[in-house]
Length: 173
Image 1 (cartoon, rainbow, N blue to C red):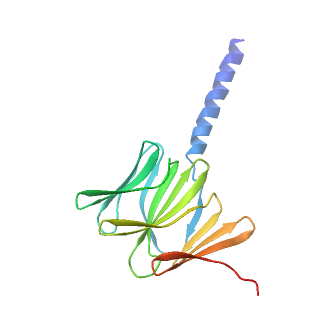
Image 2: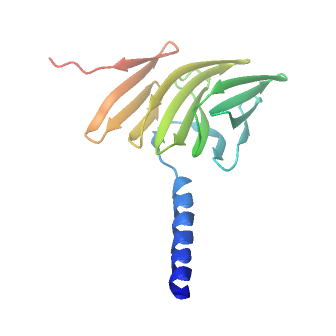
Image 3: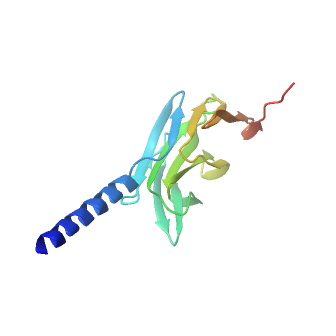
């Protein structure tokens, strides 16, 4: 009897550890074509800190059911929400327009899915340009484009033009 209890406890402990380890794994399938800079990486067990190419400090944290990205601009904290919870979070700088003005690309894995955010940031002003749940489908980020694939192939292309993302829809002729 004691042997079965010990075996049961061992199995339960092994399942708990493997479930925790699996929950910390990357979910997204986001790829970049072009130069990107990883600014911050964090998980549900540790919040991240980083520095933007412009020199401002950037952090993330979760408070009262919402997670935030915070940029310290000249002693002033600028916050913007980036989801309800985080399993894995990565923030990149990427130049969509090729104009040497980097946008912030955030990939937030949580609750078995992933959300992709793009923010414009300059001198203490953050503007959300794009937010889309990408699940674990292949997503390719390129200069001027975000290509979203479904299991059947290329599904949607978003074109970055004059500071805005536009959905490109194929037309049958």
